[in-house]
Image 1 (spheres, one colour):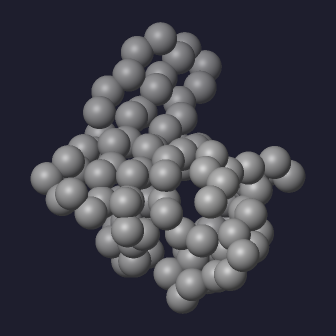
Image 2 (spheres, one colour):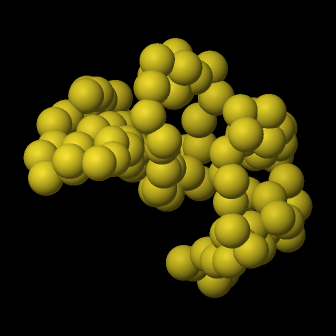
Image 3 (cartoon, one colour):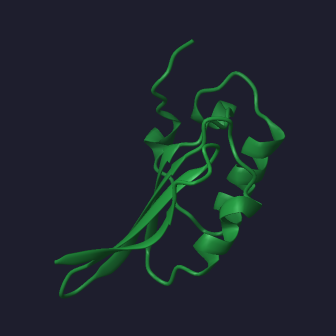
Amino acid sequence: MSGRVIFENSQDPNLEMLALEIRSYTFTFTIVNIYAPHGFEINQVQKIFCNLKTPTSIFGDFNLHHPFWGGKTSTPKSEEFLDWLNQSHFFYPEYFNAHSHHP
């Protein structure tokens, strides 16, 4: 098994991203971690995801509030992100609505 960094953005304090490609003898996949302390616009990350050629998992702290994942209200940014996930055929499990902060 091996891995390599295929994208890293730590220069922008409002959007930190790290993408790792993991290879085994039989399977290759990508893990992307995003930290956006103030949310983000989907166009900031779309180009990165459009260039990925392997199955991809997205993790992170997006700071996008939406009832789907436990928020009381939604924002335009969170609606746009959820629409993009659906249009891009990302799968999110039933426990996707887990959140780590309870105000």
